[in-house]
Length: 381
Image 1: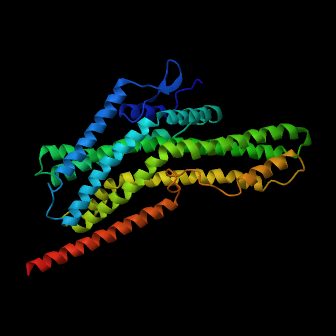
Image 2: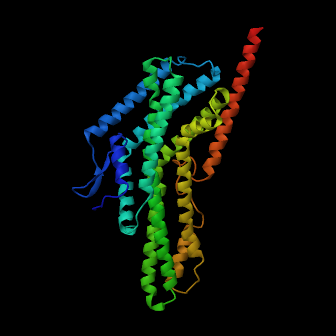
Image 3: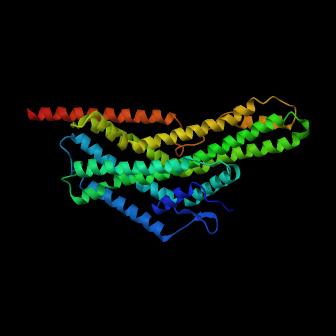
C-alpha cells in the first residue's frame, strides 16, 4: 500500500543510521519497507563489537579507576551500573534487529491508520519530541564529558576513557527507540479518539429507524477498528517494545540509585543548584522511561472509554443492542493493553515499582557501606 511521508519518517531514518533497524520510507515507490543496506548492518555490528569490547575491558580491569571518595561498595556499584548499561544496550540492539519483520508490520499498520483516519490532523508531538531528544542527548554528552572524562577519569588511561563513552551511547540509542514508541502510541490514541467520535455519531443517529441498518454497519466497523488497535498493542507492540521497556525499567532503578548514592557520598564545593541541575541531566533517561509509562497510561484510559460510551447507550430494541452487549461482554474484564513483555503493565503503577526497587537498592547499599566502615574501624585496632 502506498504511504505519504509522515512525521515518523525522521525517526525511522535516524534509527537506521544508528544501526537499530532497517525500516525506511522509499519516496520513489512511496512505500515503507525493510531497507537492508550494508551500511545499517555494518553500523549495527560495529556498535555491538564496541559495546562487547567495552564490557570486556571493564570486567578485566574491574578495580582500575576506583575513587577514594567512594567506599568500595560505591565503586563496585558504580562499575556494575556502567557494565549493565552496555550489556542492556547489546541485548536491546540484537532484539530490534532480530524482530524487524513484526516491527515492519507495526509501522505499516500505524501509518495506515494515520493516513486513513488522521489525514487532516497535524501531529505536533513527533517533531517536538525529536528536538527534545536531540537537546537532551547533547546535554547528556556534555555533562558526561565534563563530569566523567574531565573530572572523574582524569588519571585514567585512554582505553578506559574510550570504554566509558558507551554509557552515554546507551541513552542516544534508547532515546530514539523510545521516541518511536511514543509517537506510535500517540497515533493509536488519536485513532481511538476519532473512532469514539464516530461511535457517538452512530449513537446519536440510532433513534432514526430509517438508518438503523446503516448505523449497524458503521458501528460494527468502529468496533472492529477498536479491536484491531487493541490487538496491535497487545500482540505486536508489546512484543517488540515491551521487552525493551522492561530492560529500561530495570536499568532505570539501578541508574537512579547510583546517582542518589553518589550525591550522598561525594562531598563537593558545588552549589545545591548546580548539583540539582547535574542530577536532572543524569536522570534524563529515567524521565523518558517514566514518560513512556504516562503515555501508555493515557492510551489505556482512552481505550477504556469505548466501553464506557457503549454502556450508557439506551436500548432501542434493534440489532444495535445485541452488538453492544456482545462487545461489552467481551470487554467486561479489562485486560492489560500494553505490557513490558508480560512482566508488568505499562501504566502509572510502574512508577511505584520503580520507587520500590530504588528504595530496596538504597537500603542494601547503605547496609554494605555501614558494614564496610565497621570493618575498617575494627581493623584499625
